[in-house]
Length: 392
Image (tube, rainbow, N blue to C red):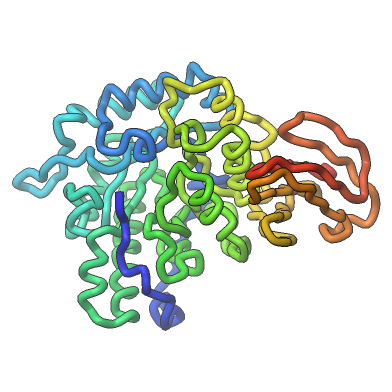
């Protein structure tokens, strides 16, 4: 799906635009990055009630629920028409959304849904423009737990203003309006802003109620695209905290466009970034490699670390990069990445990470203790990673 609106917009006059009362959602709404599944990457428009139920079943039977995955999120194309009173109804693919939510909840999972602040969604279905309070009340009545709110057609109104300040004022007002509507329902609903990183959203996403906000355009199942998005998150760590997360888009692990080495790089980087872990594959047809990557408890523990501090780039030399994330208890997670097409040695000196003495070192993917070290040099495969946990 192409989601390009106002990509040239920049954050202009943010202080004035954000002068209203801050309404950041409480940390309890998303104290750690949300984990779950989203329909778009694999199924796109070919999503329906039966498929969603099958994914929920597979999330449980595969062990993903027990590993921490909770949300089953329906993306675009579920929407039908509005009745005479303006209430949104699902289309024929989803005959009873409340019954579907009840089924997902019965599995110990939560259900997410998708809309847009514009008149139309990205796929041309009914958006929430002018019906925000109605839609929020409907979602709450169905039992929805997560809303992905995709800017899409609101961009036409933004561009029509001819002013960057006015355009962003429209955007912020639209996101605040749905935030207020969701709050008014009294139901805890995670609020995900999908607007592709336009206008430095990481600086203001929390102030309009967002629990997470997309920092990039859409991901695809190619190493080059994943790397561009993931390594492009450098410098954004200070904007993430419990309840408010940078979102470099959904996972592609298991969709077939990358090999297991590249998927481990993908998963490792997202964990270091404290990114939401939203699987985008068909959970009913996972290979052992895919399941092992998605359910690695030590990698998930890094992503879900209770300190809630996002990692950042420590060092880069050509295609070799070192990233580190502070962890609760004083330890650190460290990723040694090789973005080149050939195996290469990557080295990290622990003094550069703040450690003055040798520290316990564990290779996460190898599940191997390496002893107490002051530095580490290792051969990393092309497009690969060695993920370390240092200290606690």
